[in-house]
Image 1 (spheres, rainbow over the protein chains, first blue to last red):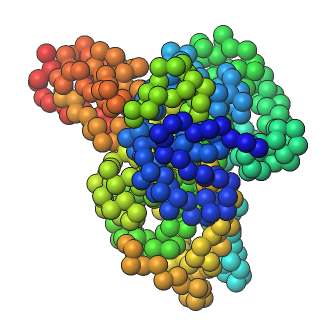
Image 2 (cartoon, rainbow over the protein chains, first blue to last red):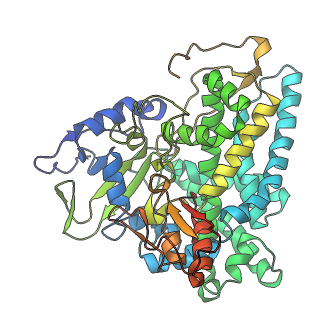
Length: 417
Length: 69
């Protein structure tokens, strides 16, 4: 395949987002891209930026630099995640604005704690038997899925199936770029899962028409906006919510378990002073964000970013892991420092499409961390460097743990903190 | 009541200006700007709704005895 010629005068790099290097340790490459310039042309045919300020500038202009093209194909054109026109986007997103408010979500804390405790009881039993359970399928993965399914009023016996569909969707772009939409097995499996989940949600939507509850599906079905929507529009909006509530938080929890496992002194500080938990988890999000790439498409001929005129129809990939370690915003950015000055990092996005569920994710992460550390204040990882399946939606796994007393491989990774 | 914004926490979700456009706007970078620091009595509920709607708690409200007009 031949790539388009680079625009004159632009810094150029050749970065394969599907390479093992980008999966396992993308940060040196992200740093190179950031240092090359505010906008770097990837020989594979698109722009990239790894600078915080440029990312914010682009995310603040959803009109000329929207995410519609990239998201519509995956989520459906009528899902608000794929709508850049503010009034329409906000009307749809507004259906769930109250449900995701801090004061409303606070009522869910007990439910989240209950799920976490139940899962960790099973983990503890496995440890007692001498096993080294994997916390990804045992904790990180099911916890957010159970919570969002609970919020949607999806029955318990369907939760596992919903997790599987959601995982297949998340995995659909893992087969390499550009995606061969007709033959790539990961893409085709993701498409199948999307259809099956869609069919299931159509049933749920229909059911809520006559069985109105407090759940998120009832909220859209019986909202003023919802009554004007086609079944398909309602389904794609619900499906995007379920998917977003699942994948990102699961990977954040996995990063948290690994980071606290690798840096026991951070863990000890949180145990000694639980009021540090929230800011420590935010710092982990800055340092190891889950969503590494946000694609934006250029609309129109007049778009200039950082002095560079961008051609209509080209794509800009925002590299959030690079932006989150930009020395222009963060002092000593490569260092994990839970005491650093609190600033919003780009892990939850910025602007019109910033994460609707940020508050829910934060409550889940704090509850999960508290529950985990209450039971296993001294857990250790069996391997200091877990692997990563993808770069774009990056989370570690598997994560096997053992109690400290069993003398697991204790990584010597301490001087950094 | 006094409205305080914390720009470093802001992720520009726009929720505040959707809920209370008379009280909140944004600077050129999308960061929250309070148009009013001391809302009049008729605006107090809107200020509360906007603060509650902010996903990152970048709006803080200080209750002041007897200063609402």
